[in-house]
Image (cartoon, rainbow, N blue to C red; front, side, top):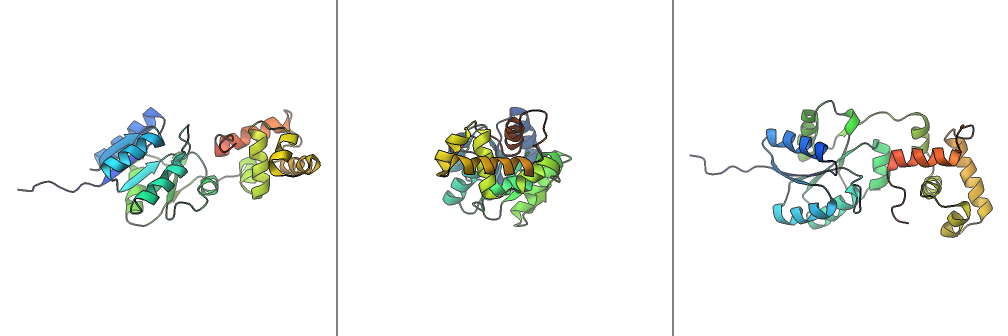
Length: 218
């Protein structure tokens, strides 16, 4: 008679209830022990109580801490936990947010996964120390946004957060003229100079669609 069986534990963190349920059920069907949370705060309580082998988390959780911050905290407390980011962000955008804070983490784009079974297969690879990338290509304006320099991306973030050029100048410690030139270069790089709607609105919309809430850290 077999007395008990070790089951791998996965903590699923996703603020959208349906997606959370689908992902959790997929792992349960493959024999994982499941815990699920809708926020990083709830997830951190579960980490302490359940000692997961794998953290599967969205990057944008709708509130702080976000998924990258959550994974960083989890790794500090439990370095053995494998991490897989599940996100609508491209690999490049996800990496820009992670900033190498979570070593060996894998990135899975929700739009690149054909089924939840593929997601679990990706998780199996992560647990076997084979980081994976299930990605979609990024072209056009979004690709141009990801290609901006760090300084230009920060300018775009601040204007997406609703700051005026003068407010951006004060925050960055530069002249208003310097900000105006930076914004102009950003619009040109993003191909927004000829937009029918205000380029500022178009850039803000593009930034938010790619990186999520631009107000974090303000």
